[in-house]
Image 1: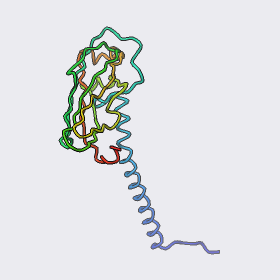
Image 2 (image 1 turned 90 degrees about the vertical axis):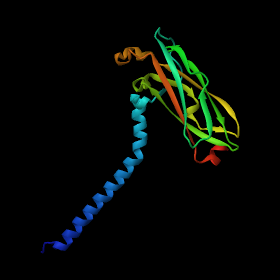
Image 3 (image 1 turned 30 degrees about the vertical axis):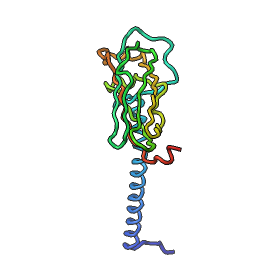
Image 4 (image 1 turned 180 degrees about the vertical axis):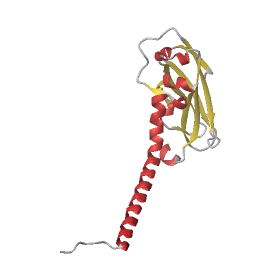
Length: 191
Protein backbone atom coordinates (compact mmCIF):
# COMPACT_ATOMS: atom_id res chain seq x y z
CA UNK A 1 0.00 0.00 0.00
CA UNK A 2 1.49 3.28 -1.11
CA UNK A 3 0.47 6.75 -0.08
CA UNK A 4 -0.12 9.18 -2.89
CA UNK A 5 2.13 12.15 -2.61
CA UNK A 6 2.10 15.28 -4.64
CA UNK A 7 5.15 16.76 -6.17
CA UNK A 8 6.16 20.34 -5.54
CA UNK A 9 5.12 21.19 -9.11
CA UNK A 10 1.63 19.78 -8.52
CA UNK A 11 1.32 21.73 -5.27
CA UNK A 12 2.39 24.92 -7.01
CA UNK A 13 -0.15 24.35 -9.84
CA UNK A 14 -2.92 23.82 -7.27
CA UNK A 15 -1.95 27.08 -5.51
CA UNK A 16 -1.96 28.94 -8.83
CA UNK A 17 -5.44 27.58 -9.64
CA UNK A 18 -6.70 28.63 -6.21
CA UNK A 19 -5.29 32.15 -6.60
CA UNK A 20 -6.72 32.40 -10.13
CA UNK A 21 -10.19 31.34 -8.91
CA UNK A 22 -10.04 33.85 -6.06
CA UNK A 23 -9.05 36.64 -8.46
CA UNK A 24 -11.85 35.73 -10.90
CA UNK A 25 -14.31 35.71 -8.00
CA UNK A 26 -13.03 39.09 -6.84
CA UNK A 27 -13.44 40.59 -10.33
CA UNK A 28 -16.97 39.15 -10.70
CA UNK A 29 -17.86 40.52 -7.26
CA UNK A 30 -16.51 43.98 -8.11
CA UNK A 31 -18.44 44.08 -11.39
CA UNK A 32 -21.60 43.02 -9.54
CA UNK A 33 -21.10 45.74 -6.94
CA UNK A 34 -20.56 48.32 -9.69
CA UNK A 35 -23.92 47.43 -11.24
CA UNK A 36 -25.62 47.40 -7.84
CA UNK A 37 -24.11 50.71 -6.68
CA UNK A 38 -26.53 53.03 -8.50
CA UNK A 39 -29.76 51.28 -7.43
CA UNK A 40 -28.48 50.91 -3.87
CA UNK A 41 -27.51 54.60 -3.75
CA UNK A 42 -30.94 55.59 -5.09
CA UNK A 43 -32.64 53.48 -2.41
CA UNK A 44 -30.41 55.03 0.25
CA UNK A 45 -31.25 58.55 -0.97
CA UNK A 46 -35.00 57.86 -1.08
CA UNK A 47 -35.04 56.36 2.41
CA UNK A 48 -32.94 59.10 4.02
CA UNK A 49 -33.72 62.11 1.82
CA UNK A 50 -29.96 62.44 1.30
CA UNK A 51 -28.98 64.91 -1.39
CA UNK A 52 -32.43 66.49 -1.41
CA UNK A 53 -34.09 63.40 -2.81
CA UNK A 54 -37.86 63.52 -2.45
CA UNK A 55 -40.39 60.81 -1.66
CA UNK A 56 -43.51 59.77 -3.56
CA UNK A 57 -47.01 59.27 -2.18
CA UNK A 58 -50.43 58.27 -3.46
CA UNK A 59 -52.23 61.14 -1.74
CA UNK A 60 -51.71 64.05 0.62
CA UNK A 61 -52.46 63.62 4.32
CA UNK A 62 -56.09 63.96 5.39
CA UNK A 63 -55.42 67.16 7.31
CA UNK A 64 -52.86 69.93 7.22
CA UNK A 65 -51.22 71.67 10.16
CA UNK A 66 -50.96 75.42 10.75
CA UNK A 67 -47.28 75.70 9.81
CA UNK A 68 -46.84 77.68 6.58
CA UNK A 69 -44.21 76.78 4.02
CA UNK A 70 -43.03 78.66 0.96
CA UNK A 71 -42.20 76.31 -1.90
CA UNK A 72 -39.95 77.90 -4.52
CA UNK A 73 -39.59 76.47 -8.02
CA UNK A 74 -36.32 76.38 -9.94
CA UNK A 75 -35.58 75.17 -13.47
CA UNK A 76 -32.44 74.31 -15.38
CA UNK A 77 -31.64 72.89 -18.82
CA UNK A 78 -28.61 70.86 -19.80
CA UNK A 79 -26.82 72.63 -22.67
CA UNK A 80 -27.43 69.59 -24.92
CA UNK A 81 -31.21 70.11 -24.91
CA UNK A 82 -32.60 72.97 -27.03
CA UNK A 83 -35.60 73.71 -24.83
CA UNK A 84 -36.83 76.67 -22.88
CA UNK A 85 -37.93 75.45 -19.43
CA UNK A 86 -39.32 77.54 -16.58
CA UNK A 87 -41.77 77.42 -13.69
CA UNK A 88 -45.12 79.07 -14.35
CA UNK A 89 -45.07 80.44 -10.77
CA UNK A 90 -41.89 81.32 -8.89
CA UNK A 91 -43.30 80.15 -5.54
CA UNK A 92 -46.39 79.04 -3.64
CA UNK A 93 -47.46 79.40 -0.01
CA UNK A 94 -49.00 76.21 1.39
CA UNK A 95 -49.74 74.72 4.76
CA UNK A 96 -47.68 71.71 5.74
CA UNK A 97 -49.73 68.64 4.81
CA UNK A 98 -51.74 70.49 2.17
CA UNK A 99 -51.47 69.36 -1.46
CA UNK A 100 -49.96 71.87 -3.85
CA UNK A 101 -50.15 71.92 -7.64
CA UNK A 102 -47.46 73.68 -9.65
CA UNK A 103 -46.73 73.84 -13.36
CA UNK A 104 -43.52 74.08 -15.31
CA UNK A 105 -43.56 75.09 -18.96
CA UNK A 106 -41.29 73.63 -21.63
CA UNK A 107 -40.85 74.78 -25.22
CA UNK A 108 -38.96 72.93 -27.96
CA UNK A 109 -36.84 75.55 -29.72
CA UNK A 110 -35.93 73.36 -32.71
CA UNK A 111 -37.50 71.94 -35.86
CA UNK A 112 -37.10 68.36 -34.67
CA UNK A 113 -38.70 66.18 -32.01
CA UNK A 114 -36.71 66.19 -28.78
CA UNK A 115 -37.05 63.97 -25.74
CA UNK A 116 -35.96 65.02 -22.28
CA UNK A 117 -35.77 63.49 -18.83
CA UNK A 118 -35.80 65.52 -15.64
CA UNK A 119 -33.80 65.06 -12.49
CA UNK A 120 -34.81 66.88 -9.33
CA UNK A 121 -33.79 67.75 -5.84
CA UNK A 122 -34.94 69.77 -2.87
CA UNK A 123 -33.07 72.27 -0.76
CA UNK A 124 -32.41 72.40 2.07
CA UNK A 125 -31.37 68.80 1.54
CA UNK A 126 -32.64 67.62 4.92
CA UNK A 127 -36.16 68.69 3.90
CA UNK A 128 -36.10 66.25 0.96
CA UNK A 129 -37.19 63.46 3.27
CA UNK A 130 -40.43 65.34 4.03
CA UNK A 131 -41.16 66.56 0.51
CA UNK A 132 -43.53 64.17 -1.28
CA UNK A 133 -44.65 64.09 -4.89
CA UNK A 134 -48.03 62.62 -5.72
CA UNK A 135 -47.70 63.11 -9.46
CA UNK A 136 -44.89 64.61 -11.51
CA UNK A 137 -43.78 65.10 -15.08
CA UNK A 138 -40.37 63.93 -13.89
CA UNK A 139 -41.65 60.35 -13.51
CA UNK A 140 -41.64 59.88 -17.32
CA UNK A 141 -39.77 61.08 -20.39
CA UNK A 142 -41.16 64.20 -22.03
CA UNK A 143 -41.50 64.30 -25.82
CA UNK A 144 -41.82 67.70 -27.47
CA UNK A 145 -42.52 68.04 -31.17
CA UNK A 146 -40.94 70.93 -33.14
CA UNK A 147 -41.97 74.26 -31.59
CA UNK A 148 -44.35 72.54 -29.13
CA UNK A 149 -45.10 74.19 -25.77
CA UNK A 150 -46.41 72.12 -22.85
CA UNK A 151 -47.41 72.83 -19.27
CA UNK A 152 -46.20 70.04 -17.02
CA UNK A 153 -47.77 69.55 -13.57
CA UNK A 154 -46.29 68.46 -10.29
CA UNK A 155 -48.58 67.64 -7.35
CA UNK A 156 -46.80 67.68 -4.00
CA UNK A 157 -47.05 68.15 -0.25
CA UNK A 158 -44.76 68.62 2.72
CA UNK A 159 -45.25 65.81 5.23
CA UNK A 160 -46.54 67.06 8.63
CA UNK A 161 -43.86 64.89 10.28
CA UNK A 162 -41.45 67.72 9.48
CA UNK A 163 -42.91 69.35 12.60
CA UNK A 164 -41.29 66.62 14.74
CA UNK A 165 -37.83 67.21 13.25
CA UNK A 166 -36.34 69.86 15.53
CA UNK A 167 -33.41 70.28 13.13
CA UNK A 168 -35.85 71.76 10.60
CA UNK A 169 -37.77 74.13 12.91
CA UNK A 170 -36.09 77.09 11.19
CA UNK A 171 -37.07 75.98 7.67
CA UNK A 172 -39.76 78.18 6.14
CA UNK A 173 -38.80 77.83 2.48
CA UNK A 174 -38.17 74.72 0.40
CA UNK A 175 -36.87 74.93 -3.16
CA UNK A 176 -37.87 72.28 -5.69
CA UNK A 177 -35.37 72.25 -8.54
CA UNK A 178 -35.48 70.39 -11.86
CA UNK A 179 -32.86 69.94 -14.54
CA UNK A 180 -33.83 68.55 -17.96
CA UNK A 181 -31.35 66.43 -19.90
CA UNK A 182 -31.62 65.18 -23.48
CA UNK A 183 -32.67 61.58 -23.99
CA UNK A 184 -30.12 59.98 -26.28
CA UNK A 185 -32.40 57.43 -27.98
CA UNK A 186 -34.92 59.90 -29.40
CA UNK A 187 -36.28 57.58 -32.12
CA UNK A 188 -37.55 54.88 -29.75
CA UNK A 189 -38.83 57.33 -27.13
CA UNK A 190 -40.70 59.52 -29.61
CA UNK A 191 -42.87 56.69 -30.94
